[in-house]
Amino acid sequence: MLKDKKILLGITGGIAAYKSVYLLREFVKRGAQVKVLMTPMARDFVGPLTLASLSHNPVFTDFFDHETGQWHSHVDLGLWADAFVIAPLTANTMAKMAYAQADNLLVTTYLSARCPVFVAPAMDLDMYCHPAVQQNLQIIRQRGVHVIEPTEGELASGLSGKGRMAEPQDIADIVESFFSKQKDLAGHKALVTAGPTYEMIDPVRFIGNFSSGKMGFAIAQELARRGAKVYLISGPTSLTVNDPNIELIPVISAREMHAQADRIFPAVDIAVLAAAVADYRPAEQAQTKIKKTGDELMIRLVKNPDIAASLGQKKRPGQLLIGFALETDNETANAMEKIRKKNFDFIVLNSLRDKGAGFGIDTNKVSFIFPDGERKDFALKPKPEVARDIVDQVVLMLKKKK
Ligand code: PMT
Image 1 (cartoon, rainbow, N blue to C red):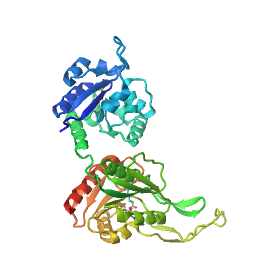
Image 2: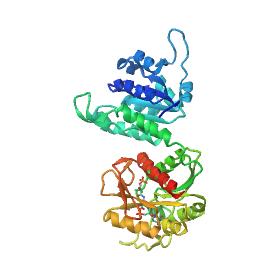
Image 3: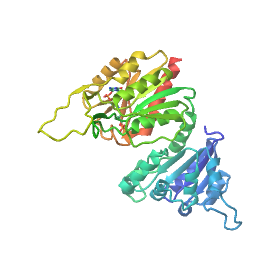
Image 4: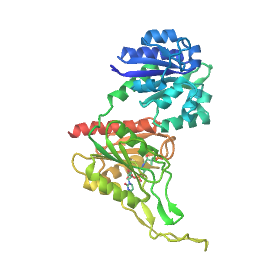
């Protein structure tokens, strides 16, 4: 239920705006108080009178009332809401959100809102696939906006494909489940490793890998959102965090990551190891840039510490240790071997054989594998949703441990 939750429903100008009427009814039916905010274009698709009647509140579009001169404060609207749900979200408003083009009340409210923001994009399939739209979607997603993916089906253009706004009931379910899971990790402490490690060869070269940190950062964000205090140890990445519950501990090499993980692990009850740690490092680091001389250059490598195995040895009853396995072949057998060697409570398997899974990209396709061989397979999803599945499993296992 959404009893007493205050929901600001933003409607932008697309044909799917008619579905917002059903979404509004769904929110009201579940007990929420709803205020509606429309872009000027949205008024051509759905009437404010209908929305005002169903929400029992005035509908806002302009910065002020043209007849009385009364100012509609975007700051007040943003502060009033427990959640801001923009459905449908057009490509136009998405671009304005990404670039802070604050030329209407809806976008100014988005820019000043402190509550969680959900968007349900809807547009023609070619528009949705366009790199410019995908880039803007990535920008708002990285800033913490919850994107409710469009579904596939018949579109207003007559074409068929991905671009239909998610169904009102599904959107309401997602918002409701967000509130029901809020703060179920209050009082818990978690360690997350993320990103690559760089193993220096000389002052300008290193051995590294393609990890962007996106998976680990998404897990840290989800743990923090649900109330945990998070220590995020990350190798070099361009990502940043802006959450008082996440302490970012930047490191460069596997040995630095190991030292920090060893220091923090005794104080946490959850550890999720998503970093892609280099297994080997150069035996010596040259103090000056290595000059080009012969046709061949040999670099001798030595083994790095296995952070996961070291934490696995120290794990206390009551602590949960979750690892990742990035595989290219023999996936399940390799993952089982890692569970055993590193004493994981479960492992998140992702395979580079699956399109859309693994390094760099915004999506992942994972399976959870447990020490007794049980397995849960998941569909290809955006990394923040994969993080939600992982944290759901963590919560389930913590409850069992009690
Ligand atoms: O960062 P992204 O671009 O979003 O990409 C995400 C990811 C692909 C990096 C992530 O989903 C992932 O799979 N991370 C683990 C990659 C990996 O190194 O897997 P592995 O199978 O080599 O290692 C197994 C486990 O042991 C991992 O939990 C790893 O963090 C840990 N490990 C490995 C080696 C080592 N020396 N110390 C470790 O702790």
